[in-house]
Image (cartoon, rainbow, N blue to C red):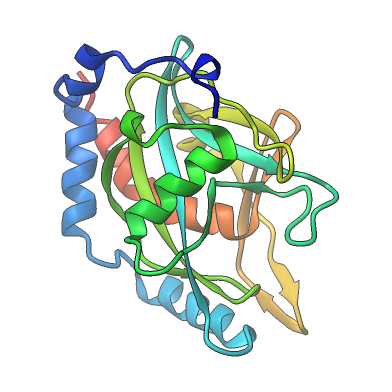
Length: 222
C-alpha cells in the first residue's frame, strides 16, 4: 500500500471518547454472550450440518463508519469472476492464518481488501460464530471507524465498496422474507435491497445478529 493512497489518521479523532451510543453497543456486545435465541441457534446448527469436514476458522469485520453523509456500515461487492461467492455483497474478511486472533484476522483482511488501516478501527466486540455452507465458521468482529480514510478495493477480489446508512439497515420494513433452498432443504432467511445492492446470505444473517443490540444503542442517541 502506498502512503499517498491513504489519509493519515487524525490523532485527536482517533483518541477521542467514543459516542455514548457506541459505548452502549460495546457494552451490549460484551454482555450478550452468543446472543442467539433458540430458533436462530437451531437454524445455524442446520446450516453447519451441510458443510463437509471440519469447518475452517474465519473472521469478518463489520465496520460502523462515520462519513460526511452520516453514520453507516461498510460492505464490499465481490467480483463476478472469482470462484467463491461471485458477485455477492460481503463484509471484508477471510480465513484465519496461524495463531492470529479473531480480531487480527478481521483487521488484516479489511486492510488487504479495502485498504482500511487497523489503526483507524476501534474494536467493539464480537458476535456469535456463524457457520456457512461453504465450510467456514466465521466470527464477526464489530468495529467503529470515527474517521473514514480513503479506501481502495483490492482489484483481484473486490469489485466495489459501498456504505449503507444505519437508518436503512435498522428499518425493519426494508427486510423481506426470502426463504433459501439448499440441497433440498429450506431455511428461513431475510434480505435487504438497497439501491442496486442485495444484502443476503451469510452477510445478512450475521448482520441480523447485530441489529437488535445496534438498534437499541442507536436509539439512545441524544
